[in-house]
Image 1: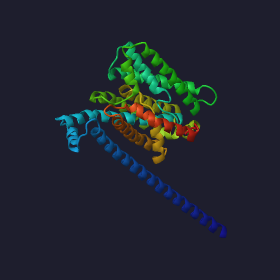
Image 2: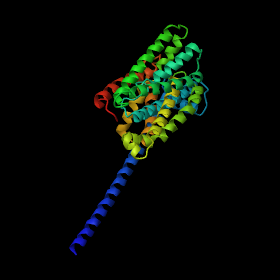
Image 3: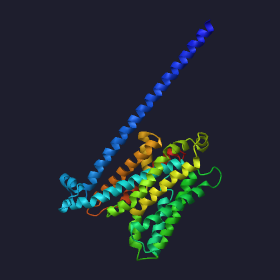
Image 4: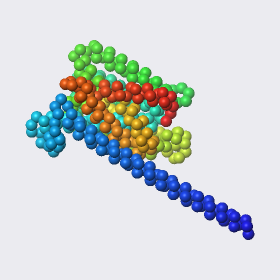
Length: 361
């Protein structure tokens, strides 16, 4: 009789332990979701504050009343007119920063490379070369002309870099992808310089566009890029669960029933669309896609279902804040946002290399 009693007691203890573990796991997941939601709300509030500052700060200071009136459509007067011109610039900075932040997050997830970024992998440069070719040989001069060229150039470069990085033993390792992207970016930059130096008539236009900035843009630019950004963001968001599986490794992801190549292609296509569309209207802006994902992981972890929207909010806030800073540091002139993001991103890039030692995610 003792043995059955002991077995029954052991079974009850095991069941109790299992229930306690399940309850503890549920509570931990709930706390994690609450914390992530809190950080997301904080990020949105910070972004809204930065957007208001973006419409207020410039060569001419304006009051809160004029800002509110301009947002409501009243552009009468010098101050309200100035705010009305800054609103599309602010919106473009927000959507571009969001696109670049999501692009970096998805590229790092697809390649499992902590250094993946549209600039480091050469995708921005590929889009730039395509646009410069259009400016030089097809006499293009508007963002509506650039966008399809930029998307095509970004896609071709992404495929080329991945194929080069996949050659040899071990496949597409983080180190090989970073080297392939850097070498490709350097080669394409040389092609851009060779083209523009032989055409004095377009060198100013090409140079201004290559620096990367959101100044002078209108609602037409926002309307042009919005459909592409929506499609790209949805593709990335739908791939979030698959990216979580890819983080475990291709073999384990496939063992869990994940269609590895389909997930990778869908996520990469969404990232390329976001990057190409953003580059078409603002020029190549680097390092946002590198800095933002690492900062977001420190706050909310590695779950791409949360990481992608949080990267969008953080990227939008970072680029808009950099645009504000560019208006302040060089008054009465302006410093383009692409220069400031490079100044911010370069030290972060060095720190990531030293800390990660180019390990996979």
